[in-house]
Image (cartoon, rainbow, N blue to C red; front, side, top):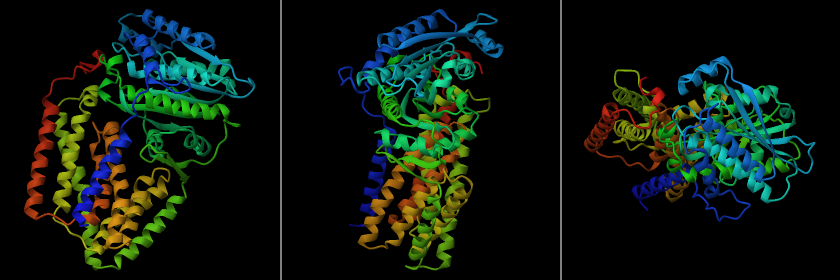
Length: 561
């Protein structure tokens, strides 16, 4: 089988794996077995709660709280509501959204407790918030979370009385400033009964639900998640990056406490974030199924665990295309780098000299630099001259992904399109990424896997040689790298694409490294012509974003900003 045919197979398999990694499961209907989470059942709550915007301290929000309390009582939960006064800054934000100046609005948490067999054991707490921003019905943020937790509690109850208490905390004032969570974790006596917390959020209305934050020293916490969740999504890279960001959710209020914490969120369909278009019909039911199924799996594991608050050193973890979580101690990264170094040393002896190696390293650096420059340039074109509207940029993400894909492929063709590297050249191409992996392993060991694992796999493929064994190795080891980088590029663009599409240059370089052993090169003229066409598409897409009117999904309160 020729290299080009194998390359086509590698790319096709990589695309399929990337699609699987980024696509939520099909939703289950209301006729699903009672022990299963069913988005079809949860949607009944979504439609009732998200029928209209329900700001904190509003009459609409009071109706939502009453609905939640009735649902909890129907499941045999001990239900109570805890009112508290919003702080001044939250009152100002509420007045801005509502147009009513209420100096000291009263907010209210809704709490339901499903009694366990041993009520002295620390409880498992599930948390979401019931308030919305001004003008949005909030079907995703955070009605999907509320509905997911109510359906989770129902599924748990259908399996009989749990070993320990299950608490469902639906907070108020999250959008105002995490007020409900802060009140609970500083003032509510029930907080002393809590051992573990699962929070659910949404910054969009679709896509996979990912585990993006945990409590510190998460070794035991992640081990439980790996055992429990049947189709997981999440990574220690996301956990590491989230720590660097200024973002907050209700789980922020648990960081300084003794609780084991997990934070899940969906960020697909980003145009629906805080949007007036965030209606029940616009919500991706597959994403709701994904959120609820993962939370239910983990909740059941925690309810039967002997210990909830155990700590162990932070670990490396990431989902393998939703098939399971791969978990290992951070020091294993050094062992992987050692394997990669040995494999690259063996591959370097198969042909070419040091000049070929330097040329390969130079091409990789040129690819990363040119891709970052191109993505920065076309993004500047898409931004225009004024201050961009944050929510309008979220709505543009699908087009920004097309822009980034075309720009990145153009950079590849201009730097490596006509290249047919010798073994030493392939080793040289891997060296800058190997060195980057070593730096990351030293500075951020739980995040370094994103470079270390692909470099090791490609190095092993290179060490297998150029014969049939080598081609099989390139297929078996290269396709997962390309698939993972496709999904990573997608999540990068979903997360930071509107401001930092340049970050997609790293997944591009790693995917390129996996494809290079099979790349036989194009003519220089063909490579330049194809790159020119892709650049035209990238610039045209950027101009489309720039010249397009403000998206109708933008919240009214931000439309003039």
